[in-house]
Each structure stands twice: as C-alpha cells, then as structure tokens.
Length: 169
Image (cartoon, rainbow, N blue to C red; front, top):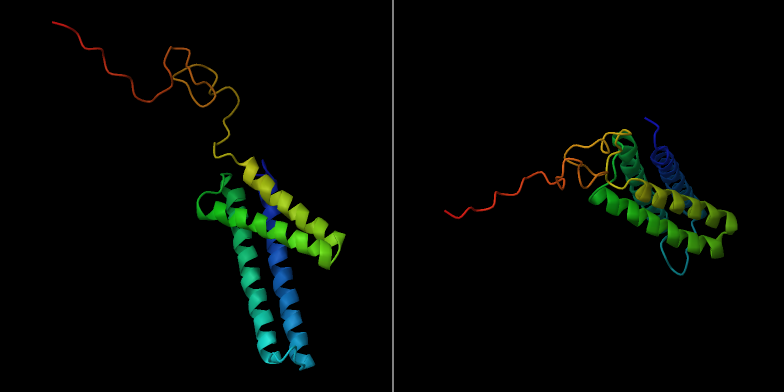
C-alpha cells in the first residue's frame, strides 16, 4: 500500500494547504470587515466577502488537487485526463506563488512553495502509466510483454498473428 509514498505525502500536503489557504483568507476577510475602512473607495464589506470567497475557492481547488493525489495513491496508477491537468495546474500555481512569495514574504515561503512544486512534479513523473510487474514475469519468455519486445518464441509481441502468405495455385 505504501510502495510509492510520494502520492500520500502530496495528498496530505495539499489538504493541509487547502485548509491553511481557506483559513488565512477567511481571517483576512474578518479583519477587513472589523476595520470598516475603505481602500481607494472600495466597499469594506465587498472586500471582506471577496476575501472569504477567494479563500473558499482556492481551498476547494487545492482540496480537489489533494483528492486527485489521494486517488493516485489508492489506485497506484498515474493520473489521467482531468486529474493530470489539475495536478499540472497546481504545479504551475505553486511555481507562480513561489516567485511572488520570494519578493513579498521571504525565502521561507518561497522554499515551501518550491518543495510543494517539487512534490507535485515528482508525483507526476513517478507514475509513468505502466503498472509495476513482479520481477521475472515479462522476461521469462512467452509472447513478449512490455519488458521483452521480442519474445523467445520468435514473435514480435503483437497480440494478432500476421495472416498467412497467399499461395499460388
């Protein structure tokens, strides 16, 4: 079950990040609401609601990415289709957030973002789409498999045999 623990780690980190992002944005919304000050003529209530809504949206986005990573861990298969695109977008978001964090927050936030980026990329690269085979199954002859493109019986590993050559009467 823990043959490739990177998927479990990525899922845990993304779930924690989803909670953290949602909580921080909700807290910022409450602070803006209690300050009751206008920023360049903007309505403080609207800024508060926007911060809370942004926190919920980003929290759900990272939770969905964490769910994809959890499904990868449970199935022990590479993500495909929408899940793969979601994880790639999470890697891009972490790269951009890391670049902004370096200038706005500091190197520790940058380091966190780069570590999460590395974990997501490692998850995407670790699972290559082929299931792991037990040692010795593909290399012991037969009709050939992924580990043995030309079998020991002379076949090329294709599932269909070629048609017989036509004979001249």
